[in-house]
Length: 626
View (cartoon, rainbow, N blue to C red):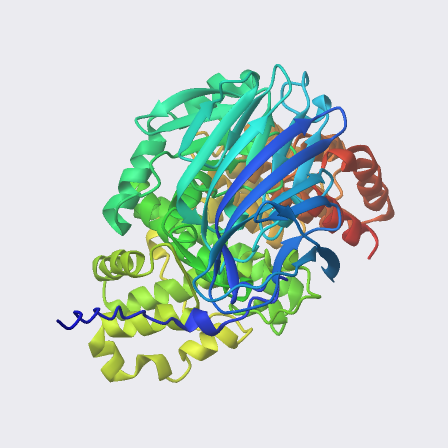
């Protein structure tokens, strides 16, 4: 009897399959990690992590070696294959990584395990904080973040967004400390001071994070908790309770099911350099959002939106970073529209557009990093792609696709299908755009991808200002009063204007109205003499606020007018936080100012540099040496 023929399984190929990620040393097209098990032992005394990584590997094409990403700060003790120690070699690859070469042969379809013991501790992304650098000022703190390519300093890996793997971990910490990781399953081991974690859905290596410190938690929703230092716990609970679940449910209505199980929030120490980081199951977030009124909630909406765009469907190489951030900005503003309405959403988007305009003003329209698809080689510092372009120009392109689709409802139907089609995969723009045209065949028939002035290839590869931006006029009911008041202040000098300014009540304005008001004055002509004194006396809520968005603009206004009575305010703001978005513009403004401003910049940096994240420290040093 003849054997039944096996049914052939059609394996769909993607454009991303032919893309090479130059940021990785690994031979991931031949062999890749399918699962990591990571054992960490943390020593604050030595500022050291003893690691043992067990990597489950799968061979895709026959080869005679395995190459993994690592870092020159990592010391490899031993590599074990089939219960035997094997030879290995570590060689330089880029300024941000090394190559771990292991000579062993495998054939397509082979599955095997490598066990690697090593010591790590002072690589980029591994941040040891002294007690004085934490909110509680009592215990040291460790956090390890992988974005963009820093996890190769924490564990050997195929460190590219093209590869997704599951992971589990065991973390041994000193007595009196707690550990938390980006995982949906967390527990304490049978031995003292050991925490266990696992994530059964595949993620890219840069989305695995670890934090160890004086960390406690409280529930803020049916699938969410907030983790933070004890002194911030109640403040964080009040900020997030209830609202996080509202944002997740809005995202599910718009983009489909939330697949990650838990959505927890870790409020980081003040030196954390980003607004947030979207690690699955555990968003890490700046303490700058804890302002007591929910006015910085757009940061949380943004990180929740990454649950679909960036975590579920991921860019395949860092040249396509805009695909993560442009779609996430769009999703964030859709959620904001659902929760807070159109006017506030447009006002926030106008603030983002102003940041993009400033980027073009500072960098020049022809700057190569103004392209959505950036050209990278291994010598380019990947930190440089972190600017407003992938976010706001990417958002403009996504809103153009929505415009082509005909309505937000139709476009969100497409996004749901996109997330289903490419879930747990890594893609490039061609995968996205081909699927878009297949989903809307009438647009394909019209040849919209080649419409003069709006060609998809130009969107991706041209550095100029986006050819389409969305209509934000629905925000004018909030923008116009702010603009009108700003123009009055800029015209101060006649008694009528001065009276109108001083008597205008802004106590009911939301954060983005105040930001918009200050933005107009920052970009406008210099204020008449004495006006800064009047601003200070009229709006003490602005001068004394803890809201970082407002403090940034106020600092820029103070620097612009060299208003010395408020220099201590700038100094205190830079001492209180280390977020890139707020820190770099202030140092840049000071450095472009008078000799006194330059000396102030040098003084503040000398006092605070040790508490800053490596990325921030490097960027500030670059400004002060220019």
